[in-house]
Length: 124
Image (spheres, rainbow, N blue to C red):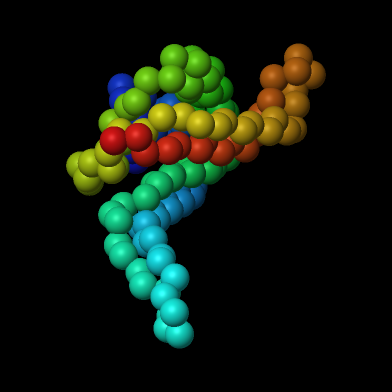
């Protein structure tokens, strides 16, 4: 298992990925001061996003129907636990975007290669 989003497991048989990008922000408010730099106050954590990117090659690894499962999950809008393969819990995330680009087609229109990117946003 590479990672799990709710009950969906990213692995060689479903949707293996090659890149995971995680961004975390922290909030700092500033108040202007006369003849001095603005005062800054730490307000706590801000937004956290995760982008998962990869290339699916169904003849070698993965299943194209996995992308449809993620579309269904995104349509529901539920917050889902994100856990990596080592058991580290990232938090609750929602799917905010899913890109897929299909290339190298067979004569029946089935893509032999699907590049994908999934955007997640932490909500809790």
